[in-house]
Image (tube, rainbow, N blue to C red):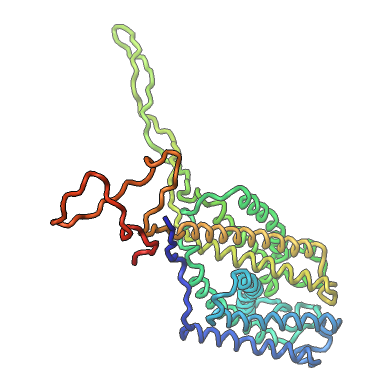
Length: 444
């Protein structure tokens, strides 16, 4: 018997040219990169546009030039990603070659997209602050950039994040959408390794979440650097609060993916319910003869009845939370750490507690990203095994192997049909005919 593999049905991969919406999103993403790239190119060319006199960016020109070059390359990668997500050749790119840059871009843009609109809202409501989005900084702070630079740069980042995120959502739905169509309660139980890694990420994430919360609330715990001066209220407090939220979001997403698997079908909520329970109480009854008789008296006893609440969380919700939280936590922790180690004004304003917070951010984000990657790889393997190609036998009969039993193990001859007018043949089996032998070709 010759096995013939059937064509597999695998996840659909769209190879058609991008539709109108994707073309518009691609054009918007590329256009939003132009102002930032032009500004960085002007700074690399020696221009000081947007920089006030005495800016900390002028303290170390070499470090500033390297930072401008790196950020220019990073923003140019957004253009490459926009093309990759919309062109036919982008369908054949290996998954890791797309996911890693996209995860980095999401992590760098998500905090800006969250914090900058909140900072504008605080300013509109009359809150004090500055520095992160203003040119003058807090009271007594050194000048950094002119106000219009932040509006142009951060506005462009928000547009880039929205358009690029929409393109990636469409791309991921077409290529990997089958991996997160289930609900959390339908996932198989996770092993001990993902659970241990998630627990370690939760413990590590408590350090930056706690420190950033204290700094946002006005406590100067370890904030002896000049970069945290004036961050107790206003716009800069929004930045610290945002940095405290993203580690918690990452851990919550990983916890739902790993710790809730196999046991999230029901959530038991113990609810105290008072109900009458008949309890036998022996009481003496006075008659001519004292005979103790049992009397049932209803006594109200509080009983806790577990109420089961069904959990119907789609897998894409905790997966998106782990993606956003881990990317924002790890990339910004690493970026600020590298910028601080590079010297210049930012290094002088970084304390030991801040280095600890950023290091823990990198570790927690990397652990959550590892949990998410393991989850997706496992889902891909499970889906590939579930859609394995079935084996179809051919029409040719299999040849029986010769054994020591001799002719008894040979297949019985198949008699040929006789014509109606043919004479009766002897009882001996028909002689083999060449036309009855299989020719080895598959039937249509």
